[in-house]
Image (tube, rainbow, N blue to C red; front, side, top):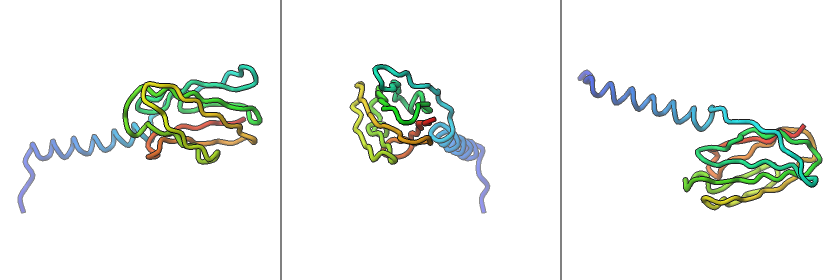
Length: 127
């Protein structure tokens, strides 16, 4: 049985730290919140897509149409699609372009949206 060298310990510690950081960044990091503004009867929020969704929590009123405008500012393969399972919406987001997604939450609740790989996450809170 051989002991690990100092440099092997450093590499191991760095790998463990990287694993924790990636998990925190994609699953636990707090992103901004926004309350949708109503214009011409439609609640609208612009969501920046760059390593995540910002804002990641969007508050709306149920029963009114919602338009989320996804402003994708990157080419990462993970962010090329947004999925709203509760509304059966799956939309391609072209890089460096804006894409509108519209739906109407008919009852109060929390509705998640994710990237196609389910690594980037956000939610719409209908009140």
